[in-house]
Image (tube, rainbow, N blue to C red; front, top):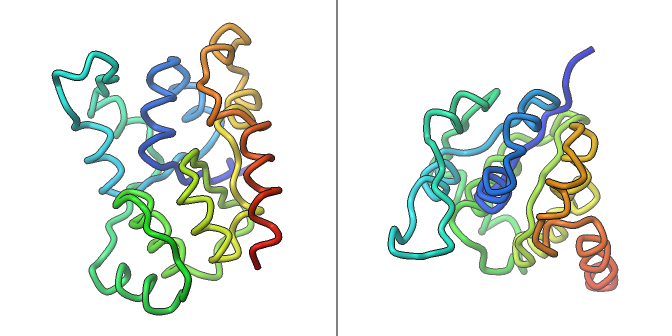
Length: 170
């Protein structure tokens, strides 16, 4: 049986490394991302005390696929989707890739904890395909002690609340 494909953004990558569940996710799913999210996850303010250091080799080794996004795909995302909120570059590249590759295979899931990216996924009619890191990690068999370390915006209850807020918008 083929693994489910999961597209992850920068925030998910960083949190998965922070709570040490990256390998479990990559064993359970075909984890994919875009080059911009890899770049963002592996950089940052080195003086930030809360910065999570990502091992680029480990990150790339765990990925099933890495996608490059063209400037044309980025432009099409914005031009073809009126009302798209402003989002970070990594999420914009991820959503541009998804938009350019429609129709998406049924098994593709998006995982993000960024509220603007969730608004954008709603505009793109993808909100029902967004999964929390908590849900993915549980299915990957991540230990409850690790799950207890997840920040609030990576939990299913937070994502459910955002979905309720967004549904009346369209």
